[in-house]
Image 1 (spheres, rainbow over the protein chains, first blue to last red):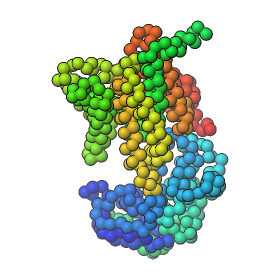
Image 2 (image 1 turned 60 degrees about the vertical axis):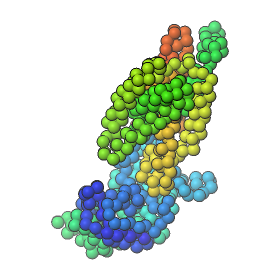
Image 3 (image 1 turned 180 degrees about the vertical axis):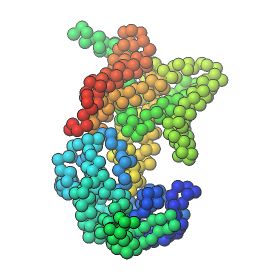
Length: 222
Length: 288
């Protein structure tokens, strides 16, 4: 589904890793781990086609438009932007053909799914970080993209929110979508994902998460 | 009754006042959404840069073709877009901060314009180019303004949704659509077009005031984008109307009068506006 060949990415002249090759299968759920600055976020952007690779190739077997949904880290959003939560979430309907009535039902359902009912008319500046994050995830739920790229979806979410987020990730996975999730919480990644892509400055490792990530108690000692 | 008559009389009695009013009102309506989006896109300064950028182009147009509307418009449009494009290109290629890049454009444009006007023999008054005179709007200019305003409003309605998303969350828009750069380019063209047509009516620098002041003031009145645009249009129209009246009754230059009324509207909004205005303390973050 997502194939990277001799891929190098990063700032011009400063590739983050040696050329890497990997292939993420259709319908797989892959966690991306690595220390700060190893290039997890930029890798997602390169896969999403939002940033050019320095060398090599990325090919994604999905329609060019709407085939891929990307959840960026939320700090790039202007919190003073004068729209309401509902308008932000409804942007997920872009390119989706639905009657106005179905649209409204679907929107209400998604807002309820993400525990956002009652906040529809809140302006962005009056939302907490966690509410905004759930709104962005709700927007993603409305897209029908077969490939979902999530950059730290659990950031700013409380324990309940994180559980909700993993629940939806599993539901998306079960519906046959291909997911790539950047996450710093190794225990969760180990528990929730099949495969993990570990990025280091020396290269990338792709393998079963149970093998690549040691059980949590040992991690804490180390 | 008598007082109310004073508010309308000049526009009923004098053709030049009527033209100035109509031209100003349509300009205020079409610049309102542009100004609001410029602020949201953190591009408030680009209006100034373009307004200065128009100057050398208009001066060149004047040099070659004399005081003709198409020559001034084409020259201004080319130079304005060129200056905005040059500054954007430098920022993208070198990473120079956008505001610094724009700030570098002002003096270059202004000096080039003054120089060209000097060579052309100073038959065109620099002050007129910069500050204009709404009272000198003739039939041709007014027709041009109506066309530009109509076109702007329709175009803005068409690109509203992609432009909104491109402003709020360009990464998201890029993944679902390729309209982002198109919307951005068309938006910038509309900004330059309005500034060029406006500079012939109330002057290059004044039209920036009419575009930005009501838009900035509207931020103190609402948190909803459509309301912001509407408030901005109403404030702009009020400024044109009151400014023209002041200019008529007190023999003031019309451009500065309009902009100063808009400025007063801005200051009043800062103080009395319900959204984070000075009299609204503490800032309400959780109001509906």
